[in-house]
Image 1: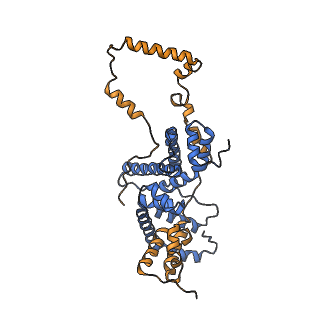
Image 2 (image 1 turned 60 degrees about the horizontal axis):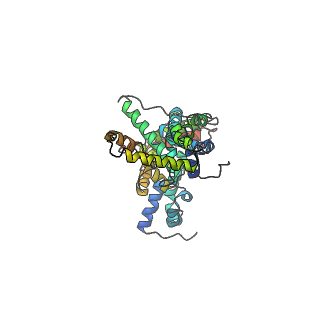
Image 3 (image 1 turned 120 degrees about the vertical axis):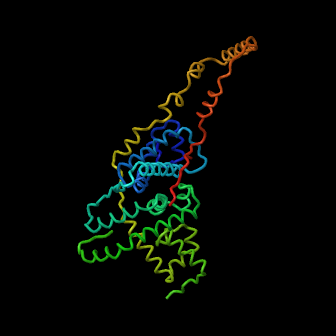
Length: 198
Length: 156
């Protein structure tokens, strides 16, 4: 049966009745998005992959009980992923010695990165990672995942006003953190003739 | 020069809040905000705020994005445990399989036999299951899918 055009809710119900093809379609449809969110929240490829796998494990554990009431399936799946990431972050903070250095972010240089683009990316990744978890989550959902404000608020279980406040505080913090670097980067950019900033 | 939309203090504040939360790409704002404040946000009066927000957007867009390794989906599928794989919930019960071939008359006969047995043993003392077992069954009964683990948000 061709599952490609079926809604998530239909596919979950089929998977709940043991339809493996429906489960495969759900995995194909959602893995990259869930991984992207986990990567942005946790900063490392392995941690993000583990969190993505755990998200789907929780889905399989609950799939037979799915009823098409309440939140949309996608919203529920993002919420599960976010809870897993928050648990992971909390656990890391609790287990880390007080004087330990923060976890290194898994920076991924692109093949076309110049030194300056790589440096810029590093600075931005560090600034994002330094945000409080909820502000980073709001930015991840709205800016990077391009989720609507209503859906992002549902995932985070906050009001739209509260989401806007988190977004504004997150962006302000980033702007303040990046402001001293902007001029420096701009100056270096003009000195580096081969720089290609994307 | 085109006529600039006039703004009240309240509208101006709302536009600034949108730039602060949703960035400089007015086209990507939520539809209700775009409809209410889009023209004003794109006017010269807010050029500075728009430019500042767009500049931060551009910075954000250069953050690292990495695709998962290609075998992640296979690993997820390897961990799948759908109900059909679970004998408790996916396959028909033993009693159902035994009763399926019986004709209706036989089932009626079995029912009558059960009823007669009930009369004979009506006065017998049957011990109820202990209370903790009853609670165990209740806890096992799932209803709606939910992810309601209490999330203790960190204070920002």
